Amino acid sequence: MFTGIVEELGRVREVRRGTASAQLDIAATLVVSDADVGASISVDGVCLTAVEVAPDHWVADVVPETLRRSTLGHLGAGDVVNLERPLPANGRLGGHIVLGHVDATIAIIDIVSLADGAKELTFELPDELAPYLVEKGSVALDGVSLTVTTVGSDRFGIALIPHTLAVTTFGSRAVGDRVNCEVDYLAKVVQRLAVPYVGGLR
Image 1 (cartoon, rainbow, N blue to C red):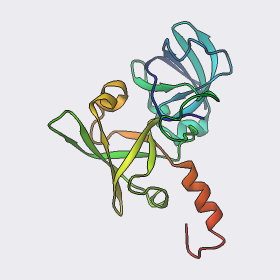
Image 2 (cartoon, rainbow, N blue to C red; image 1 turned 45 degrees about the horizontal axis):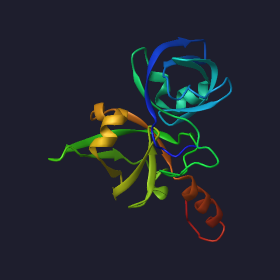
Image 3 (cartoon, one colour; image 1 turned 90 degrees about the horizontal axis):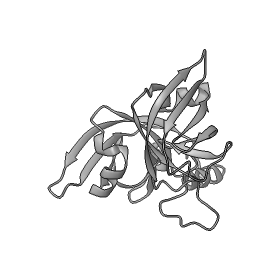
């Protein structure tokens, strides 16, 4: 389990593509400082397993399902990614519960820069995700725990403070970029439990 608090920006050293799967070789130092082979590390919000670990980089296998369901299939050498280690049992839940299981990729449709260095971003909202997003609720975008500021019929907004822009990949995002979206896991559990009792709830 993760919390959506990015610990380090990693850089893709190499993508080794097979016939169906791929391997990512990612330069990093903090997230590998206490990692062993088999450790879980979040890459842009996707939980991956380390199959090789060195002091300055690590390698993960990426299966076809992950390549299809996330933006990881489009990564190339030199790309920067958000990295986070799992939450320790005695750690602080600084963001919200993030599993690293991407629901969909969504596009940025608007970016507004504010005078104080903050930014407001608007994202497309697919119908299948709409029931899980509420104003002031949580959403994980590229592994970053964020608060939903507005929700419309086909879009939603978030606000980014300068610190978040500086320590995550959102500082270089542009309109049209696609990001990994994981809706609030607790919202999905509530929806699943409520279906037998509330007609028409999807």
